[in-house]
Image (tube, rainbow, N blue to C red; front, side):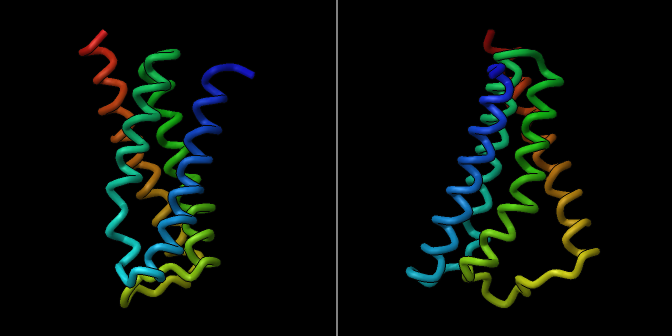
Length: 124
């Protein structure tokens, strides 16, 4: 398996575990699941960094965007199935809401990936 594929799979696995544990913890300790969103941003930056370090800047950005897409689809569904504490937010989105959120999160993850990949350029 190519190293960039390992980075992608690791990123998706990390996001999945984060979403699952965060969902459970949000119910157990009664806090809003959305408060842990910055952890996802850190993961996107790290994936962008790792992808750029392994290949190039564009690869880092694409990998981060792919992990963000995974987070906005599979990760969100995971939080729904585990009944994350989302406060007053409706955690049963319409299809159009889900699609628009997936596009937004993917774009945001790509920006985080750009930050991570720029760090590689500046540091190495």
